[in-house]
Picture 1: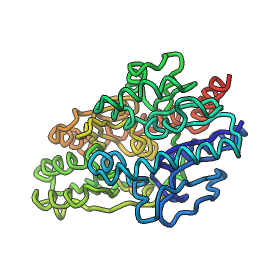
Picture 2 (picture 1 turned 90 degrees about the horizontal axis):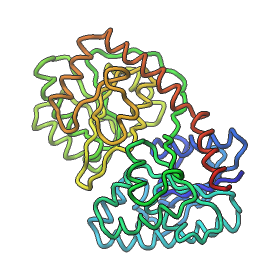
Picture 3 (picture 1 turned 90 degrees about the vertical axis):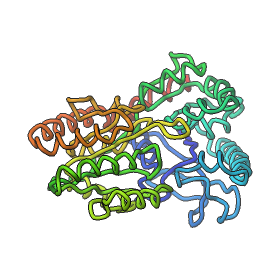
Length: 391
């Protein structure tokens, strides 16, 4: 079977952590004997065509290098909502994406087109003129867009039901698909795969708390900072490492200084996967204090949570979006209310002061994610989705 991915995000190189789950998903399909190609946006410094991990990547251009800034920064929706210039670039983006997808279908002749994020990707396949069955995967942020805009909700009610099959990465999102008119028998809940990596021996630094993710509102790094203010008053040995980058970084750095936490918080920046593995190995507790952001978006799944749990790090997260699918409170980690720094601090303190309980949660979490998120299991589920779409 030949599967064509269409997405507005994709790894730009093999060490690119952003969108890596799509390459992992492709690897699972290749292991089953399928061929995978991808239509994704171009950006400055990238080749228009290349092969990454056996995937033929076709990058469409939507302007000169200087204006191709919508993709790969995690801020496409923010840019389009806040700027008329970005909206003009986005129209060019859609036209180019649609043309590139149709060209790839005509030339490569896939058996199925797998669209990731109904918006904007689903627009290239609607209203059903590709001549190829379409599978549409919603990763969360795209579904929350429909909550904010009546025109987008109207569009979602037409684009999503037109897919032969639809998938979501967590169970709370399935109800959203049904509310937008997708038949329940066409919806499959299947997360993205999280492959096993070469294990780095655990050597946690006492009191080290790790946050890893894009520095955007939805990820909740600001809640982690506020929680640190409580933790620092209780324990002089705690330290927070913020791994990742994004538009909120300067504001977060200013807030850390205001809170008097400059010597308790390290802004590490973005790291390659090998260095991320070292961060997991040295962390005593991993936190993911995700919240609902100003656009109404929540965390659809929480891939870094699965990575941390597989690495054996005790985790504390918020009961937001699809995180409840990943963490079972009191069994594989701790869940606290979103936007509550004191509750986050209390849960972290509990794990730091009771290493035996923390280790018990970590061991249960590792066994759980190894069983549920293995690439081979995810690949077989998607293989079934593709075959139902083709049938």
